[in-house]
Length: 183
Image 1 (cartoon, rainbow, N blue to C red):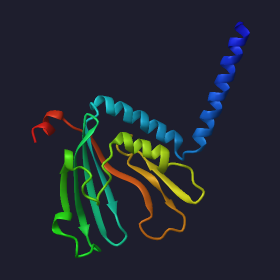
Image 2: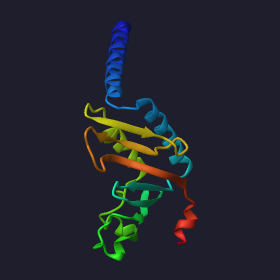
Image 3: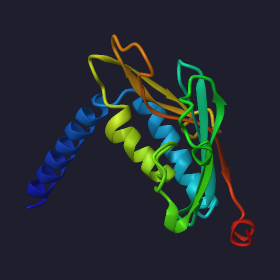
Image 4: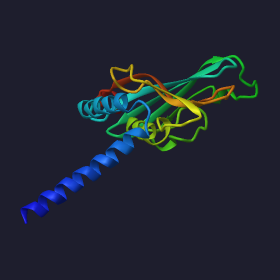
């Protein structure tokens, strides 16, 4: 009986190891990502899952923007967008679209800016989309926000303009809950 149990345990361990080994081949920067994810889980716990992060984007034609997303206890409570450089933008853009702030019920109303997602969702997209090994692309991963994701995504080969698919986060900071609630 004991030998059957040992055999089952060994077989299950081997199967688990096989699946784990296959999974790690599917992601670029696997080791760096795992380390960053652990730092994220520690940050999430220490901050009470309340933080803000700022995503930046720049276009080769000259315009740049930033979006700051504020998360309170795992819920997005604010998204602020603004162009930081407007060269190359269409002159037809209304003034109200150059800078705006969405709060709880409005989040996601505007089309421009970074997607309204939490850092938990950023890490999920990194593992499920952005870091997937591709034959036709160059993948990027940096963790320069005290170990948290700063750059994560890919550029398909032979793409010419604005080809990066992913996210660039220039800052991540815990927030004081009482500060946000009183605003």
